[in-house]
Image 1: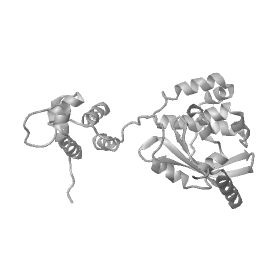
Image 2: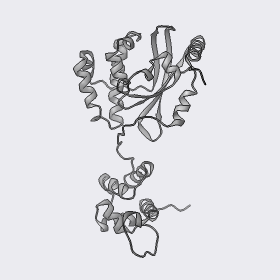
Image 3: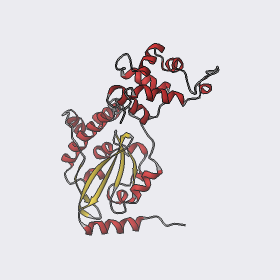
Image 4: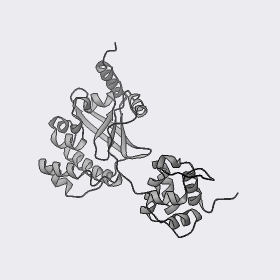
Amino acid sequence: MSTDSNALGTFLRDRRSRLDPTVFGFSGRRRTPGLRREEVAQRANISPTWYTWLEQGRGGAPSADVLNRIASGLMLTEPEREHLFILGLGRPPEVRYRAIEGISPRLQRLIDALEVSPALVRTAAWDIVAWNRAATVVMTDYGKLAPGDRNVLRLLFSNPAVRNVQHDWEAMARFVVGAFRADAARAGATSEISDLVEELCRTSAEFKRIWEENEVIAHGEGTKRLKHPVLGDIELEYSGFAIDGRPDLNMVVYNPVDPDLAERIRLMVRDTRPERD
């Protein structure tokens, strides 16, 4: 079976052949569809000779900056950009953080289907952007909070009600701060969280003390214990899931350990479900 010895060049030629020159203001008769090499080089602000060498498999490995310019010039999607880096450098590109307002309806339907398992979707800055009804009755009714208040760290360090239900607040606070630091770095959001960190250091001496300890914690799965005002002392197992194509988002699902607890959560969810017209 033969393989393409110049996969990068093949990919570049294929992608430029798909673009309509008139969209970018280029004219003139063409023997082949798409942009010419010099037009891609112009859009990427690189040397036409260097771009030609890349397509021909000459000139050595390109830099990340050159690949980013080409990705922009060819209007590549994020998966295409990642593929370009893997072909050109043998690795994915550095993560670029993107703030979001919400999630797709499909993902919301997925977490809504988890009737007795509280589920949350949070950003790398630990802003809660989606939740299901089980999370509302077991954790916090995020829908009643202003968007800016739906942040796990703000709730943990500034909201007495959230603090009081933690089984061991100090241990939970240390865990959250360490995991938050790791998530932000992994998603390339270190600069984006600076205002939040500054705010919390100013308003909470406890956060400032823990943050300055520089702990980094992994949080793939574990157990969460709460002192719930209705359900009493409860225990939930949780697992974190990455969302494909969105390194800035993480879904966390909490599963009741006790079948009796699961049934009581089910009843609470049904009792609080709004009546349909």
